[in-house]
Image 1 (cartoon, rainbow, N blue to C red):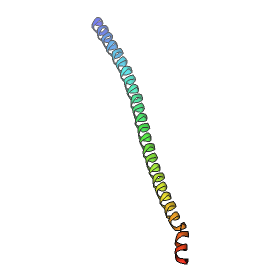
Image 2 (tube, rainbow, N blue to C red):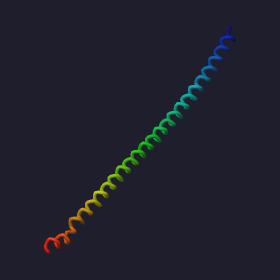
Image 3 (tube, rainbow, N blue to C red):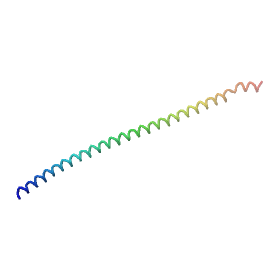
Image 4 (cartoon, helix red, strand yellow):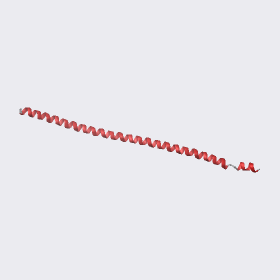
Amino acid sequence: MQCAYLSICARIDRDLAKLEADEKDYQQRIADYQKRQEKDNLEQEIMNSVLIKENINKEFQSWINEYRTISKELTEKQKEVSDTSDLFKKNTI
């Protein structure tokens, strides 16, 4: 009876040690997974930031191009309006 008791206790101790080792291994796997997940999330945030920056740059460039077009048109209109000397000469002669 004593021998069976000791055998059962030894088996329980082995099983307990294995379970504790498995628990430690799984906790490490969870920690590794969380680190990878955090890294993936950071990479995704960086990609989103890059896309936002690119969109801002495109929009800003569009504004600049529109400003250039308006400025060019206004300069041409100013030249048209400013160049009235010939018209003045025609009407005064």
